[in-house]
Structures are given as C-alpha cells and as structure tokens.
Length: 152
Image (cartoon, rainbow, N blue to C red):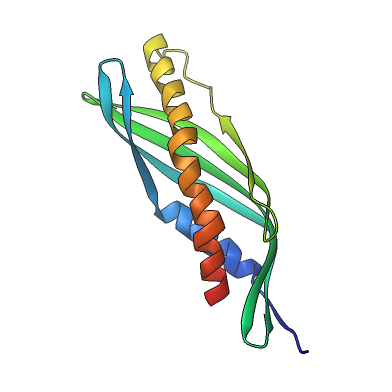
C-alpha cells in the first residue's frame, strides 16, 4: 500500500488569503430608521500551520492543521457618509478532523470626535458581521477549501 504525500502548505496560504481578500460579503442592515446594504472585506490575512494531500490508490485525502487571522472592515453608506467598523476573525484549530473555532475581536478605537450615534451603529455593524459573515467564512473553510485542496 503505497502512500504519496504532497505538501500543500504554501498552496493553502495562497488560496485562503486570495479567496478572502478578493471576496466581499454583503448583508442587509436595519437599525432604527437606518437601513442599507453593508459590505465586508478582508485584508491582512495570515495563515499558519501545515497542509498536505495524501494519495492512496487514486484517492486524495486532505490532511491539515491551520490557524487563520483575518482583519476585516465593514462599510455602510448612510446618506452622504460612510460608517466603517473594523475587527478581526481568529480561527484556531482549523483541521481536517475538527470544525474551526473562531474568536471575533472588534476594534473599538474610535477617534475622539466620533459621535455616540456613530459608535452605536459601528458596534451594531460589528455584531452583524459576526452573524452574517462568519457562516459564509465557515462554509468557505469547511467546504470550498477542502474541495479545492482535494482537486489541487
């Protein structure tokens, strides 16, 4: 029974970083009289860990243990202004055997001239990112990444 193993660590870093930075996640926002379509984008994506594909009798078996740090920002147009909030997803223990564990960190550093209403809307947007974007990110990690890895 011959096994053939191929390192895919660099491929995983490029694939995950590329997919996250090129994709925008949108979701509807409603807060009081404010409504619109929020757009979330990722930047500063860092992937660490190991990834490989083992082949046995033509079957491609992905084996990986990765961590991911992805900074994000969400923007919502309100009248002539744009409300922006930022944060970070920390994904640990993302492996071929376990579902990824995620921690969301919200950036709460606002300039001192920021109004309370703006801060409240920005915090609301941060919560909405966790509600709407994390399930999409989870699908990207658990399904799209694994399928692409098998095909690589």
